[in-house]
Structure formats: C-alpha cells, structure tokens
Length: 165
Image (cartoon, rainbow, N blue to C red; front, side, top):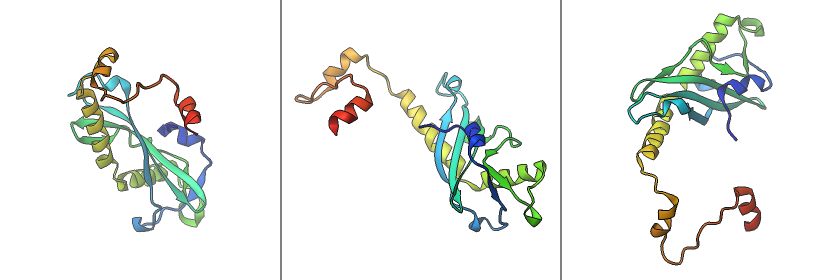
C-alpha cells in the first residue's frame, strides 16, 4: 500500500498542542518517499516527489507529508512550505485551534525536525543506482540462472502466496 501526502487530509483529525520541546513530540517514522515519474528522464536530472511520515498521538495515528524538490544533487527543500499536509489540528493557547498562519508554522516546525533530507538522499541514491543498472532482455535472463534453479512462474504475487501457504 502506498500513501501520498495529499491522502493524509482524509485521515481522522487529531487535535494536538505542539510542545515547545521537540523531545516531547511523538516519534515519527518514514513511511514512503516517492519520486515523480516525470523527473526520471536522466541520471543527472533533478528530482521531485513527496514524502510521508507517520506517528501516534495518544491512540491516534497521525501523518505529515509534503512535496519536495531537489535544488541540486543531494540538496532538498519543501516544494511549498505553506502546504505541509497533515491530519493534525494544531492547538494554541487555551486548546483552541491555531489560526492558519500559526498552523503552517507548526507544520513546518514538525517537518524540519524530521530527518527527511537524509532519508531522501538514501531513496534517491537507490533510484539512481537502479537506473544505472542495465536491464537485460528477458530472453537473456536464463543464461544468468545457476544450473538447477527453477524457472520463475508467471503467477501473480497473490497466487504465489496462496500456493506457498
């Protein structure tokens, strides 16, 4: 299953007063970073995509995501800092929902506290490596198969999983 940043808007809203001390924030884990298909034209091209991080506040699952762009190889930034998507409803003093501007600032604080740039560096290194590996035509793959290794079946993964069970 893949989650895109914009899908977080459909998750149940979770009210949360963001503590001043980030050590008191929930632990967020990286769920997915995608690279836009139209940014894969060449190995030296700059990339763009989105990333999603998920954590828990109380008993609720919360997510935060945004689109990113690569300024130069290995240097990333939020594509639009005014549009960090989350199902968190940031609360201010008196537990009242923050106004739009304060909520944008809170969402950006959260995004900038996550190690998303290092994660993207790893994701993009893997995609660039995968693109650099030549793809052999399927009729030549049998030449690379060690003797005695059975030929893979063309079953779908659900059928293969059912057969293995």
